[in-house]
Image (cartoon, rainbow, N blue to C red; front, side, top):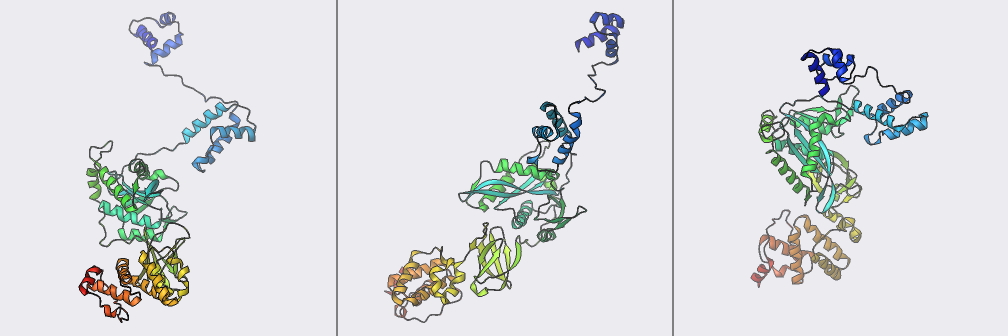
Length: 495
């Protein structure tokens, strides 16, 4: 560049001839003329593309492989080395690897997608699911966390679930809208099967019933990205990675999912204080523009659950999502409605709730409530020792002691009377029945009637009548209070 400037000064400033300058600097006169036409070197300009005599005949094969790769899984696309091997094995390519590698690299760069910068109006949102490891109650497992991002303000919401299922999708929206204090006007999704039942030929989507119910309740408008194109909702995709790196590193530990979600919610609130690059206002300040145009929350809360009809089997079980849940045996062989929530399964019959269970995410699991089978066991007493619903029922030690004493005194009838004592748990709490059993054993009055009498005395806060302990006729009330008194204090009063 220094010689370039000296040549131009010699001609234009000093007034010397082009021939003299060419002779002095040892360059051609044509070169001097080019220097005089331009103030800076133009650089080398190729007039014709580089000829590839060895690779040329196989360029079409390489281009076809790269084009076909666009429709394949990202992790199973051709590398330059694999293309080179195929050219040699299948097409007899005689050249070297380097020119193949250079051509493939250049073509991959040219095929990379380009994007248009977008602007986002207030009140628009994007939603997606991500995955991360968490430790819940000491057990490490995979969490499926839902994110909702408002691109205009960068305000975010994150909540985690044991699985990416319809119930979690619905519950996440309820929580997100409550956190935002309103409903976004538009929400952009990918083509998740939870929301999209089928993609029609004209690009329209047939939405699932659950998604339609959610949309009808909150009145937001949906938008869906192109199939397989996560970058259509770049804000949500970015939030998935941000939440994993910032909210879940190190691996979060919690005693329950609710505790974990409380932690994530607090992190979302804390993030509102940050200022994103390119903005003078904080996220919270910019969120006020979003808040002003959000749709109002409905007057009634949406029931975030999946509803299915089912039939009770002869084992008094109802199948939901590959697991069996028990109901009282009185409802055997009847049609019921199953409501699947994220952490609970509720079973109803004729608008009456007949069973509630913790939600199981295993497969082919059987979830029992022992109380559901006591009425049947009272009739089929021989099945008591082999009853699966009672196998893992953890009761205080005094229950086993009472059974031993009843069977020692009454034999086979002692088993039935023991089941009748267990049926007190259908009305009273374990604590109340436990105290009554301990009192009966302490007094040496081993019978169902004695346990019932002592139980009612505790609940009604009155001293027991010891003269009725042997053969009392006491009806059991349908509804009992949970207030109990210290029986030993009552016993002292009677003495």
